[in-house]
Structures are given as C-alpha cells and as structure tokens.
Image (cartoon, rainbow, N blue to C red; front, side, top):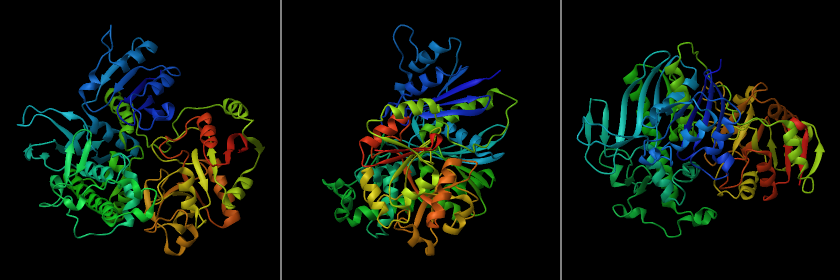
Length: 565
C-alpha cells in the first residue's frame, strides 16, 4: 500500500510536494496557480494534490515565525492542517518549521544520489531559533554545514547564526553568532540598493559583468571591512546598505532609471554588483573548504537561495575539480517542501532506497484532450496549423519567437523546454529583441539549450558530464561566441541546459532540426512569462500570455500544433 507524504513550505515561494513510497511524484509552487509572484500559503496546490491523491501525512515546514502558529476559529487548527483534514480525516501531522536549514539539506542530499556527503546550506534567514544554553537566546540560521550518510544519523557540524544586534559569541566550538549578515543577505542588500526586490538577486548577478574592481568599495567580508559597517540587517526580512556610514553608496532617488536605459547606469552601481558577486563567491569557496575539513568528505551538496547563483556554481566547479559537487536545482525555499517530505520518509521507513532525482518535470498532468479543447476555445484569436518539428525549427531560424507548451511544468525557477520561449541564438540582436518583448531589463542575459552530445564543442563544461537543470553559467568557447551572440553574455558566458532524447524527446527533436538548418545544435531558451509574472502553468496561462504580448507563435508538440496569433 502506498504511503503518501505531503510536504509544504508556507512562506515566500510557497510550495507543496508529494512523496509516494519515497518517490517524488508532484511538486508545484503556489504562484504557478495563483499567478502572484512569490505567493505564500500553498492552498491551491494543496487542494490540487488532495483532490487527486490520498494523503497519509502532512509535514509542515517554514521558518518558525510566530505567525506560522496562528489558528482558525472553532477548532483552533492550523489552517494547513484544517485543509488537509477535510480530505483525509485521519491525517498524521508533523511540524518541522523549526528546522528550515535541515529541510534544505534533506532536499539536496536525498535528490543527489550520494551515499554520503557534506551539505552546505547558504540561505538568507532560516528558522528562528532559541538556545537556553547561550547568553543570546534567539537568532536566525544563515549558513549551515551538515554531514549526511544514507541510512545513518545526520550531524550538524557548523552553523552560522545572525541577529539584528549584539556581540559575537561562540558555543560548542562550531556554532557561531557573529556580526556578519551572511552571504545571501549581503547579496540581497545590494539587490535592494540597486532598485529591485531583494529576492531578485539574479538581476544583480546579470549586471555584475558590467562592473569591475573599484578600490573605493570596501571589502564586504574581510576582517576590518565590510560586514555590519556596510550592511544593516533586518532579520528575517533582509538587509540594507549602510549609506550613512559609507557615503560612497548615497542613495540615488532615480536608482531605477538605469533598469531600462543603459546610459543611466552609474559606474558605482555596476562596480557594486561586480563586488558582491566576486566577494560572495570567494566566501562560498571558504565554506566549501570548511565543509571538507569538518566532514572529511569530497562530495558536497549546495542548497539554499544562494545555490541558484549559476555564476558562483561554475566558479566553484572550476576551483575545486577534485570535489564532486551537486547543486540542487530547487535550492530556494520552495524546495524545503521536498526536504520536509523526504526527511520524514527517511526517518519513518526502513525499506527506503537511494534515489537520484533525474527529472524535475513534476507539475500537474494535463490530458491532451483538455489542452486541445482549451486551444479551440480561443480559435477566434489563434489559427491552428498541423506542423512538424522541422517547420518549427525553420520559423525559429528566421528570427521568429516561438513559445513551447508541453507536458508537466518544471520545478524550480528555470524553464527547461516545457514552458519556454525559444529563439534563434545566432541573431546578433536577439538579446535586445527578446528582452524588449518580455519587458525585461536591457542587460539581462539568456540561456541556451544544447544537445548533450554537442555541449563540449560549444562550451567549457569544466569536467561536467551534463547540465540538465541549467545550474551553471559556463564559458562559451571563444571561437563560438560570434555564432551565439544572442545568448553569450558580456563576460563570454552562457547559462546552459543540456538535453537528451530520453529527458525531453520533443524538445530534443526540435533542436536537432534547428541544427540541420543552421549548423548550431542550440536553441535560445528563456522562461515562458513576461516580466513580473510567474512561469505559465496551464494552457490558458500560456494563451493569455501570448495575447497580451507581441509573441505570435506557440508550438504544442503533443498535438503537433502550431498556434499563430
């Protein structure tokens, strides 16, 4: 009999994951259904799961905020418990919101396929913790190192906490309460300073190559510089640049003016983005060395919000060629729903087996009949053409944007060919054109999907056998950069996804056909959404996004349809 565990994360990027006898069979973030970016409280996803599956146990994650303990009238129930109980009266409840970093770590380790590993969690603010043994009895997790071994105990060997005020303290030799706001919060503070939501750190990462070393910017993490004389923490919400202590960072009232106009980019802003990227990746390297020294292991999993920094991921792959590193593709807080379910399953059961997560196409299943009926209900807006992959490839080669909608949606923030916008990577004006259509900032780079067997010909894979989850911004070989101008960033890199026929047959075939026409086994790939919107989830989301944009074509390979607006 199946034992189904529903894990949830209630905070920003809220999500739910369903584990059936240890196998991850469903994962979705609330924003994909509610259409509100970073939406909290995954009620719609929970309803979708509970209406389709029997649930035996609910595991609630979070960050131990007092608000997470709020109850409903009459029964005084937690709202998540109340919802699931109405579908499953005998539901077992487990609360794990006091172990946020452990849930991140569990997600990464049990997805990695490793037998044993050091898990490095680099997070903005984990669970609010209380320790009676120390003078300061509350703090937030910011960096942790765990030692996991399959079917054995889990050990925390290092934990870095931070508080909004107070002195440096140490406890039990490996827990540190310090005056450092943490790697992720420092990055978020710079992102906020540059005019974005702190969580939109990927934009700062994209801007960083436009800057350079600036001797007037103090080091952000070295002793005597940086730390809280640059950043003001505001846990758990974020951190801010201390522009009073550091007048070089005086706030520009028109800070956002450079977002859509390159001429308004100030040197100090570009240089600050460069510094936070450079300094944080060096700090991550130090943590990797600490992890190997404390655990004696040469296999490491990296997870937590900072784990999505694909520039740093590539940097440490090259810096540590003798360490096997797994970068969790669902590194952000949404992934803790998976970690919650997997942690409890491995605590409860003795007959579990090791599973490497080889696919993250984990969204809801939609029948071709439902998709077909929805498409035909829009027949006054779209013409429907029966089409073959070679015809779609030809359209793309002629510099037409073609969106693709197929199968189950991708878990995590990267579009991997099921909910993607596709374009010609050889078009010199491609980046500017697609950024304009998506209403994104001018400097933001795009990804490429390459046939796995051709990847080494075009990119320096740094010893990687594959990159199926688009977790690395790799160097494009210099002699290939001119052929890939639309997806090669200013620093000569490209975030890439490798694909095989087994992983995604329709997408693989399309890229093959594009190669026959152009000689390039790569497609320009970006997420199927407009700026500020979540990735499309349903066919209706896709059609509505087409209607309100300049995009004209959508490919639905399971029906052999090309929709033309």
